[in-house]
Image (tube, rainbow, N blue to C red; front, side, top):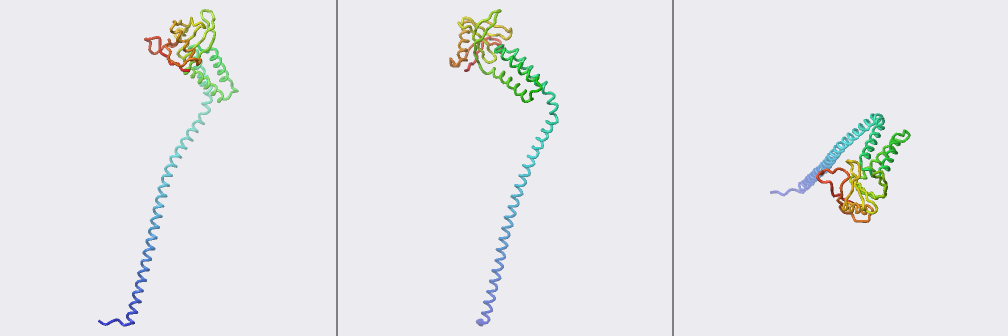
Amino acid sequence: MALPTLAEASSLRDETAQQQQQQQAIQTRIDQADDETRELLTRLRDAQSSTQRLERYNTQLASTLDEQQQRIDRQQHALETLDDTREALPDTLQGMVDRLRALVEADIPFHRDERMARLDSLERTIADPTVSEDKRMEQLLSVWRTELDYGHDMDSWRGRLTRDNQQSDVQFLRMGRVGFYYLTPDGEQGGVWKNRDRQWHALDSAQRTMVNRGIRIANDQRAPELLSLPLSVDADDTSSESASQGASS
């Protein structure tokens, strides 16, 4: 086999180099295409992620706008009925005062003068046209809270007891709204108020001892304990007149 001439060898090298250059150019274009493809894929993923975030935001925004619209509708309805509410407010407040007065009158008669005076003051406030609606409502709620608080505490005080057209100095004991008692200074006489017949009933020696303990508890002179005393109001369990009442200082 004949060897190629120098010219043929030079031409072959040139052709090989040209093919290598072409291959490099093709590879460069392939690499560039891969880079562009990867960039496009990245942009596509970013666009999809942005679209999903936008859809979630739109969903949340729609819910928020719906809630705001409902709130606006409620406020609008309240404004539309405000005049009716204002017209009905005096009667509503007076009705609450009447119910409160009925409660006090039917309750055991502790601090009666003080409580009735408080109600009279409240009624004057409710009827006064120069007093703002906020002030009327504030005083009404304050009196209601005071009456409700009586059901959760106990107290003791010295006072005058009127019985059988006679007055005497005694120590009173109140236990919530269910127990109202008195004890003479020498401890020889004592009574429990019975709401069913609106009068005092005498206590025996053991019961007077219990009242004395309750007085000392109310005055922070004795640790709290259970006191077994007859109630001033009718208990649910009518089989027994006595019940154990928890006392707390």
